[in-house]
Length: 217
Image (cartoon, rainbow, N blue to C red):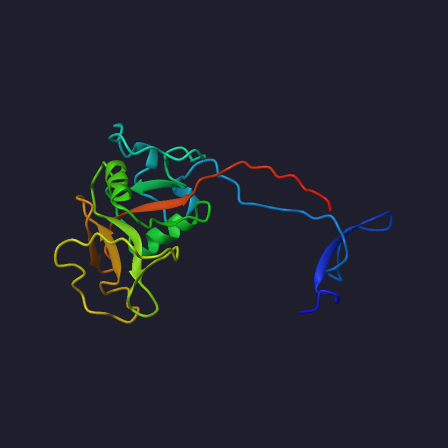
């Protein structure tokens, strides 16, 4: 693509017209407008098309066990910081299928079902999953080559399969087969039918408030 052609858009602001758009050469020097996702106020049952049957604030009056040192970013109320991410575990009496759970996670700050890359992360999630009505869905599923992959596309270097797992033969994308992964209460993993009703673990990057300085040449 040639940047000397009109492949970029600008917003007019002059005495004749304001707010209208114009296509122009991309090498013209202009001001610009940036945007970024904001941290939403709180994760609630109305933030997704799937209504959580148990309000998150009412899941338990207890405090979870102590957890490893958190990161230094910002997390929503009810979420727990760890490293660069915030984590939330839903484990009410009413469970959700893996596709439903993933959709709910994606509704919050571009989140995903959790990917897990160390024993420490396993123990952290076990600690915040303290109501334990269900096993919980995580972000591991069959990839395009019918191996296993994380939905956030991070590498699969660490695994924590339960003895004898995964034990289901490869199925080509059928969510009714064991193409999705749940975590047991002891932190080990099991491949299971994606339509089973489970709790789930979401993660999203911690919200950070940053500034930058523009230096002119």
